[in-house]
Image (cartoon, rainbow, N blue to C red; front, top):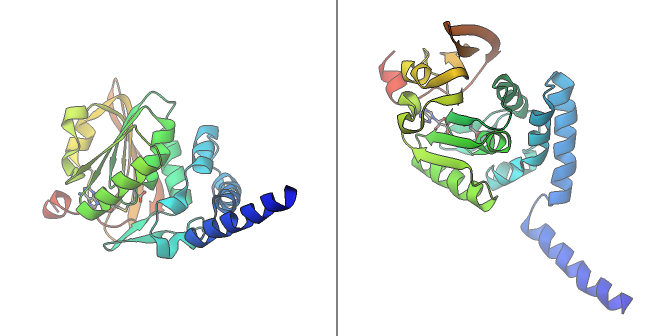
Length: 236
Ligand code: SAH
């Protein structure tokens, strides 16, 4: 009996490997190393953010041809001239939002859906807008396949936000406009936090927060994101 079990198991295991360049076990090991060395190792402390990064299968959200590099310390191409940010930048920006679990979050620039999945692990509802239709469609299908039910994706220009679902407790922008879009500030709830890259070739990450006295702005780190398209370009 024992021998026949083994005979059955071996081809099944091989079959899985052939379909998936990274098996989920190997991916989990790579992911743990990524969190330890690239994320915690560089100062991201929020335990919920670290746990979310340990859970989201980044390799399932990037195109096949770059899957083997999914847990490396760099941005990756996701097609249509766009890129998914380096894991550290995703973690750093997410930590700035200080999510505790009950928030409604807006993301501008769905891309691969990876950042949206991280947010979905940490907040109640995530609304994400993507201007490139095939990217938005692919992210929507991938997130549904992975079981993320608290993410809604809209195809369109995120410059004007998503007023129907505002105000948002947190807003994250992952494409760089030349200035902070006023509609996003307007859609920030009291106590809300907006993190976004601003600039041309040289960009800085800004954190805007709203309290009873108004809007406060803080400069964080230098970053490089793809430019925000649509209305942001026309308004320069
Ligand atoms: N957060 C993404 C990173 C995507 S890169 C991820 O986790 O993979 C930035 C994305 O912003 C690209 O997909 C780009 O098409 C999109 N984008 C650029 N300008 C936009 C706009 N005005 N509205 C919505 N999405 C935009």
